[in-house]
Amino acid sequence: MTTPTWDPGQYLRHAGHRARPFADLLARVPDLPGARPRIADLGCGPGNATATLARRWPTAHITGYDNSPEMLDAAHTGHEGPTHGGGRLDFAHADARTWAPEEPYDLIVSNATLQWVPGHLDRFADWTGALRPGGTLAFQMPDNVDAPQHVLMRELAATPRWRDRLADVPRRTDSVHTPGAYLDRLARLGCATDVWRTTYLHVLEGEDPVLDWVKGTGLRPVLTVLADDPEAREAFLAEYRDLLRAAYPKAPYGTVLPFRRLFAVAVKEA
Image 1 (spheres, rainbow, N blue to C red):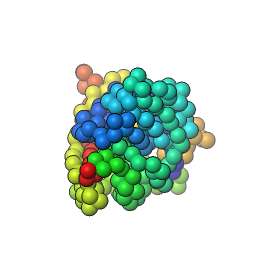
Image 2 (image 1 turned 180 degrees about the horizontal axis):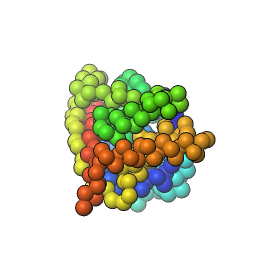
Image 3 (image 1 turned 180 degrees about the vertical axis):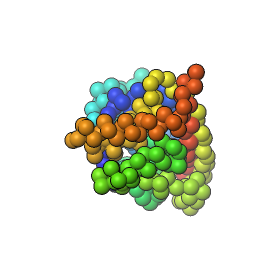
Image 4 (image 1 turned 90 degrees about the horizontal axis):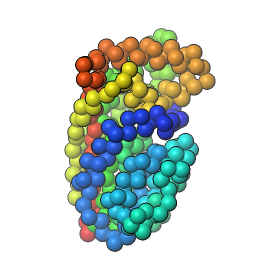
């Protein structure tokens, strides 16, 4: 798997739409056991979503973890420091593929990250094992590898012009498991588990807004591979843009991007 280079500015261009699933996830997280909770945010990105945790739990010590230097720089600059309720918000480098908690946590949360983590089902035992009794593991991730934006990207990458460089670069079709797989794994770890799916209909504005959206997330591995060849990068984007225009036609009120996500909230037995 190609490790993508991230662009915080591009990612934040659709921050409002991207924030809603995290808010919906947190709405299902119950009260935490600690009076001054310890919280980890795996895959914190530029820190804007992590900062919302401090509004829900103002006395908490919250650490956002990410493996992207670009994202961490944005998080440190924009959000690090004391919180209004006497808590603290900080950020550190870590990779969700290997991160193992070194202290007890009241909440471990992950927002749109685990689809990038091969074998993430096998990480749950370490993470739930570090939860205090009554603590929660909560995550959400895109569950739409069968959507046109991904299907067209994979098909284009596999064409004769691009397959030698890109055939195995787009996100794999097995990067997210079935809802039942998450429920079974977390329940077997002794957690009261709630798993659900939601499809959002994002109404996007601007020229080629679906391409602009994907350039911040799913297209990052392709852009990373082609970063040293600007001519090829622009050629791929032009072909992909035309495919997206046909798949997501513009309406008088904007361009509709259907986006399905998977959510899970697992509470450790108190």
